[in-house]
Image (cartoon, rainbow, N blue to C red; front, top):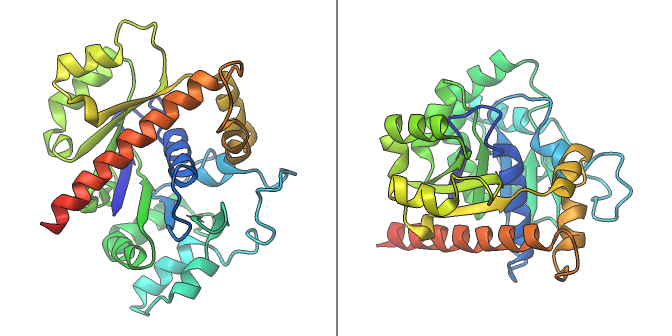
Length: 277
């Protein structure tokens, strides 16, 4: 299953944080220990999936002992694709940073010299790369750039599901629903950093843009989650609060995020069943 996380509003819709949250909680909520999720970005950014999930300096025990000895991540995979060289399962996972008992794998693009080189490689090889990764994992989640990159357009077309990350901003909502009908046909919606006190609530957005309730979820605003993202302690934060009770200040956030994951999982299952027909 290939899933692209994307937004039409650059820097305002929590694409990276929503992907990090959903990918971790999807694994924690599952009783399948053999399920593997691969995540990567098609762009370079100071704030990336690797440094929000878990900091190299974290002392928490969830850090894998050897996942920083990685052979250049995504760049190695792209080299295989460019050279038409078969990529083995062992090579793929050796190139990846792994978390959560080797169920979550991150292909860093830090080994690519600059953004133009990365885009050139992905523009040529992203479809073949995603097809290859799908052979060795249950899911591929791509943090897809908002900007008009050719690789973004190809990834969005190739994806089975596009997670559209919405903001509670009327102009941005009007822009998306007025211009991206092709994406809407396979969209699942997440409103990140959600503020239930704002007039543009989940219910209002559902009614105004005719979105079925099963296709739109929210991840509530949470100051401590934002701090964890900044500190690179997202995995320890989610693990530490996963079973928190109502007295915990993060309870509302965790419950909302769990509900988002359940809606997301149900949607993926529906899409998967449709593919099998």
